[in-house]
Structure formats: C-alpha cells, structure tokens
Length: 269
Length: 304
Image (cartoon, rainbow over all chains, first blue to last red; front, side, top):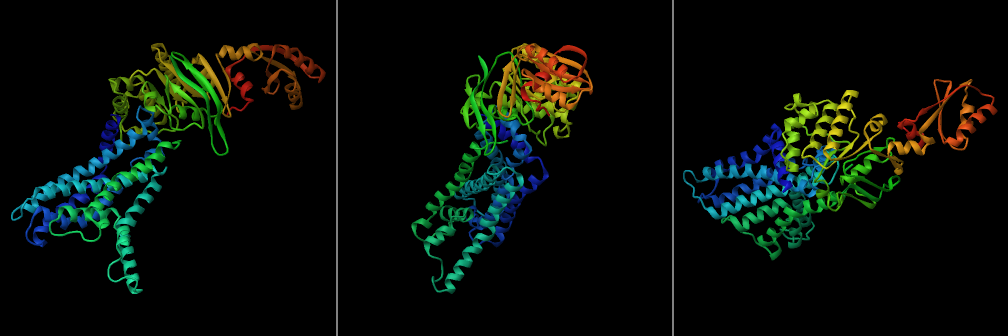
C-alpha cells in the first residue's frame, strides 16, 4: 500500500501553497454562485435535478482549468529537481508513485467539489426548491469524475516530459485546445460547410461524433442524457448518452495509462 | 547472502558505453568502495541498482531480487543516498525522515536519526534552506531509517568538510559493525582507503580491478613506489623511464624527484636506464604505495 504514503504526503504538500487554494476555490465558488443564481434565473420547477443542466456548462470550463493546473506539476518538477530520486530510492514503485500522486490530487479536487455541491444543494433547495436525490448524486459523481479526467490529463502531461515548463505547455495546450478553441473549430467548420452548400444546418453525425469526443462535450452529454430531466440527447446511437459514458470512462483511464507505460520504461537520470 | 550481485551488466547510450559487462558481488557486512574518475560510470551503475536507469544487457540483484523486475522488493532492505537528488521544497528535515519512516514501515525516532547525522538543531526548518552538507547529512539520515541490510551511497561526503567526512565514516563503521553491507562510490581516495574492506576501480565503463587494498598494492610493484632524486631532471628523461618495461607510472614531484610505481624486476632497469641517459642519481628510496598511486596505475592518470 505504498501509494498511500505518497498520496498522503503529496496531498498535504499540494494543499499548502496559497496558489493551490485559489485554484481549488475557483470551481467551489463557481458551484456556489450557480446554486445561488439558479433559483432566481432558472425555470420552474426548481430542483437539484434540473440544477445539473444549469451548472454543467460552467463546470465544463472551470473544472478543466483547476484539474490541469493541479496535475501538470505532479511529477515534472520533482523529476527536474531530483526530489523524485529520493522517493524512488525508497521502496516505492513508479506505479505507486503515479497512483499516489493521482489519488492525492484527485482527492483534493474531489473533496472541494463535494463540499461545494453539498452547500450548493442547500442553496438550491432553500427556500422554494426541491431536493431530488438520485440525479443530483449522479451529477456529483459525474463532476468528480470529470475533475479526475482533467487532473489525470495534467498528470499525464507531467509524466510524459522531463521538465516542469514542458509539462505546463502540454497540459495548458490541452486545456486551450479542448476547452477554449474546440467549439470554435466545430462552429467554423459548420459555417464553412454550410456556406459551401455541402451540409444543411448541423454537421453530419460522424463529424459531430468526432467533435463530441472532447471531454467537456462528453461530460455535458452524460449529464443531459442521464441526469437532467429538462433535456434529452438526440441523434444516432453513437451520439447517445451510453456511447458518451463509454468515452467518458476512456478519458478517465487511458491518458494516464498510455503515458505511464512510457514513463515506466524511461531512464530518469 | 550476497548483497549485490551484478552479472554482465551493460548500459549503452547512442554514442557512449557507460557500463561494459560489469560483474561483481558485494557480500553482507563488508564496506565496498567503488572508485573511478568522474564519468567512469559509477553513478550509472548505482542508478541501475535503483532502477532509475534500465540496463541494455545483463542483470543485477539486491539480496536475490532483480533490480528491474522486482525493484520494490530489491529496495525494501536498503538505504540510499543517490546522486543528483534534491530535497523536497516544503518539507522540514524531520518530515523528510518521517516520510522515509512511513515508506519503509519502520519505527525509528526521526529526532534520534537527525541527532546521529548531526542536523538535529535544524529538524524543524525547511530542508531546502539547508546547506549542501546538511542536505547530505539529512539524506544519509533517511538512508539509515529502518536499519537497512545494505547502504548504497553515491559520493556520500560531497559538500562536507574533513571533520564532517570523518563523522560520516564513523557512522558507516557503526553500520558495518551492526552487520550492514555498505557500497559507496567516491573519487576521494583517502576516504576509501581509510574505511573500505574491498574496492573496485571503474574506468570508462570497464571494471579494471576488484580487490582488497592490500591486494591491489601487491599487484603493482609489490606495493611500493620508488622515489629517485635526480639532478637535472627533464621531461625527456621521464618519457624514457616511462617506456621501460614494467613501469606503470612515472611522474615528477618537486621538480627533482622522480616518483614511480613499477614491478620489482623493473627497478634495476630504471636505474640502469637513468645512468645510460647520464642523469645524476642523488638519492634512491622506496615508499609504500598509497591508494592514489594504485589508482593512477590502474586508470592511467585519469583522475580529476
């Protein structure tokens, strides 16, 4: 169980600096602000189930930022400085190290999100809303998993290169690509194809599938399809919420698994 | 049980062979010095033991556990002071030892450990503020946690003054007396000579000698070196003497003394050769060869 020792130390070390606290405060404040505004701006009925559809778009931007910044430095700067060698001189495997780091940092983000969601639920319910347990709990779990996806992407960037700076460039590049410009590319393509008269209205299904592989899109499709009673997913089977769920789980595991296999076989000094 | 058993261990990079078929074994309870000039491959060897670096060929085991395939088990009974480490930025000295203690599932008292290596006063200061020598002591302290059966130390006295180095040596002797094997690399020969049971000399990735210090002494010139005071010693004379069969090293000390290690048979030939060159031999004596002389003999003067 040596990953526990790593997770415990790394969690404590990561939580300490003020920058981390600000970073973790961001998704928490977002959830609370959304929960505060939702009863005023949402449509009736006000329930925690329908709140999921209100807040998921915000979270699709803020959680990736927090996750990526939390993850990118997990291993790279220790590797660059040499502190990694102290850890790996002890009876820890590289698998223990990466697992411990991932669980420590995912644990931090999850703890903050969970606390914010609990308080947020209170804000939604009080005084006129209704607490609908099952979809809301599902949404909390999905959001935590979404946070884990981005933290893991950050850690994947961290173990795939030898310096903190390069890890940051890779991790932040993923954030910019998927969160900031991805939708723009899709819209641009749609506009262009429409202009050229090749498509009418929306993009063809297979192209939409490719664009919807982005983690935030998958997160929102899972939320809409399974949890938010006010909306539904339409389109062919490969655009269904079930297909999205599979992609979602793949995002959770594969980036870290793929980069780990290279990290495990590389020379560290 | 054998503490370290390397079998044909090689590490090749694109253009360099860092280790060339190294085979050696270190037994329990001995202090083994690993010598070589900078860049000879000492740290590469240690990094393979710790699985920081993967060998190209061959294998190495610690207490019967392969360092690559069973790395965690191999590192379970050892304490390490690696090369090129850095301490954790935001941890105090005490927390470092605490981390090692939890990682090894040991029950040492961190303060006792810090006291033993002489950084108790700084226990609650961030280790990143320590001087180089204090960091070295701290990491040595981490390596002592859990009474390991083998200590692997890469240049343990770097950054320490002579007193500090002597303290470290006495700690290493205590550990050996407790029954631990100690494997340490160094390019500071006096320290190795003062403490090692056996030494290995590595040069350009090749193991050129493995023996006790006395054994090494015997193998070059019966363990003595020749000091010949010559009037009007010039570089040409030195070159000629160097070319005499059986002469391992020949250097000039203080401008007038020719200092050399050679086989017993060669001693007379050297004197004859000096006579032939017309050099004026003023004095002739022998001295026990130091490890440094042997080292120079083995590595061709490549010490830095």
